[in-house]
Length: 561
Image 1 (cartoon, rainbow, N blue to C red):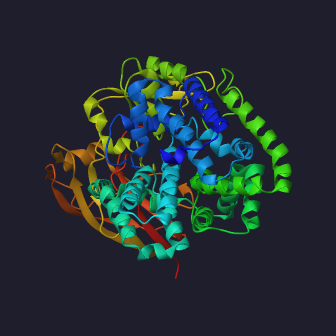
Image 2 (image 1 turned 90 degrees about the vertical axis):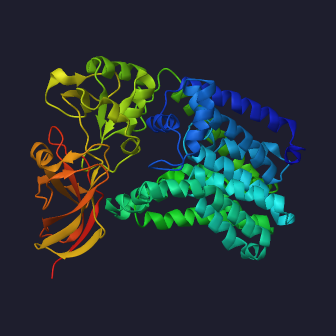
Image 3 (image 1 turned 120 degrees about the vertical axis):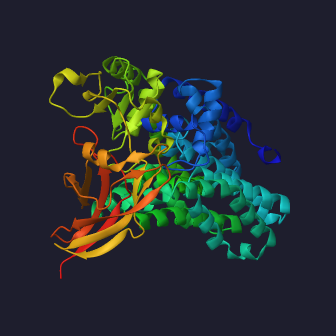
């Protein structure tokens, strides 16, 4: 608590107001579909999830225990953001609270971070805690600080894997830390506390790694991907952020801690620039770089009258625009104007319209875990998700919560149909369509597994693909009757385009397969003539020509001799 001493009264007052207004906005706004997905995760607490580690689910679980509403989902985010104001100000080492607040209020990230319950929220909070402890650790090589740093390092990894960039930046900036014995204690403690998540990943076939490093690879790279990253960073920075970048070149002296902060900025922007040369990078992935920018920039500007004169009018205008934007998105009129991929309002009415059309049947959404999550939150009933063959996958596939409704007639919600009698209409939402599916049964846990998952083949040739079929279901499976009723399909994916799924013969897919058993199988895959990087996947037919997923992606590098 000594760290928070000598913070001027205006900063305390601002922080209190910031928290209250953040809570008000959190309570007034409908959840973004991603927030609903994280809320869904908090209902099934675990050491890991398909897309990310579990810290955001922990944040939501705590707040939702107190308030079963949008406010509860976002409460810990609002609190963490407010405590973050105090840590940022103290780390900036400036007494000029006006300059600090101008910088803080002029950035998009700081406004969005106070009410959105997303994984970046705990990442930013624990990054600040880590920097606070690290600053003390540089001065005082103590076991207690080393232990605390290890615990926070684990909390960072449980927040988002991007924490690795932070750790790498710190070590590269101060390699002599590796000579401290206590620093290795930090590493051991952090790694030990992260073991439960590692075990979760191993027990789930490294599903997150596969998603981020294999499945994402099937997206085609072109120059627009890189330009999109650069444009996103310019928008995130805004005029105030660009001024903060300028301050980095005006610093005359840098302490050890300042060098680390500078390295973190370069590390995050540089690392994700390199990632943008591989595939799509979300603009918010560099969020942690803005913390040292604020810390260093507000200090430099406070001591530079020329920069302060430039910053003041620009920051005031940016802050006014951002505050007005926040008022708008929390107002009853939000959703009739700007729609950020999804409507901002009306999710309760939408969920009730879907529920009415389903007429008491369990509701499944194809290709959208966001819709399934929003339906769960706003209808009061569990929503389910169906993953067709071309889908990247999500946490619903791991929960198996749909086992409770197997054998029942379900309502499968799709985004397109020519049958107007199946339409679901809700103001501000695209029309959706509800189809009845009798005797719902999923066989996604009947898996085709392959040791080799990448091949280089000649266009037009035939690939002999050998693997196993493994029954991960709780019941036995008669393969002969199953493949008659639900034929096996395969599809090719190339350069962002997919071919229609085609039926394929499975050699030795016969007989009865007990729960937990596996047997060798093989396929003869006709390779396309056109060269390129293909991905293929196998799945059993389901309904409406939509096979489900029964294998991971396999990569084919097709070349022409």
